[in-house]
Image (cartoon, rainbow, N blue to C red; front, top):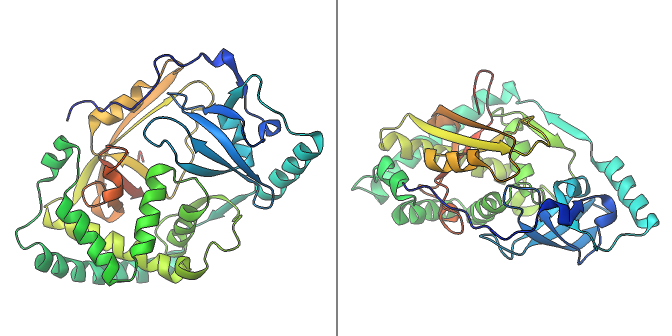
Length: 334
């Protein structure tokens, strides 16, 4: 697989043309950049006091047009134009009160008492998924190394997983969860709901902050439906990888920092890639990179929730040969 290239702006202004983001910059219309390696341009579209969140629109690169909802405290992960508008002192005080109220840690240990029942449910669903795959794709599955080399999943498998989710009444959860995770898993709290349910199922400890959205588990997004989606998803991928002869998969992560922080925050869902070339591109960082790390690990199929192989959303704007895996245990690199 040739080294992937992300879009960027070789003529981007230096950081000195901007100032660090602060709560005073929470004014709709302000333009700035993310503090990622390519300094992705954004514009602030809205400020929501009650959940303590602001809405950004990405204005360049692969995710152009995407809208992300981020907590007030994440404003420090941006920089803004020097002539950006500033909020009134009363508004800033309101933002500070929202942060004090909402930026509180929430850790939910994986429920050991629930884990055994969850694994039995996954095993039963895996058997059904294997039979379903035999009926749906009697000719077998494509070769995994060939898909990684090509950098794209398989259309037959996109259709297969979409059909299965429709049969199970989970198509809305599948589509919106995958789209959100690919674009930005920390936008809003849709993915957070799945992380919490993973902990309640005994599969991975949840690390984060308290819930801001009172409707997080309403309607189709109830705990029960999220549980069904997670169990069905894990079982399908396990059946698919078993059929392909892959009880484990080799995954990579490349990370780079510009000196702001090198501390790795634990998460119950982790992004990795099948492509060493892509991980090395992340490892390469950008012009401000001061340190970097490249990881490789054999990950058991039981930890894999989604992959680019069978997930259409992972083959649209980004070609990352991605996998989403359950959070690391002691001794794991990721």
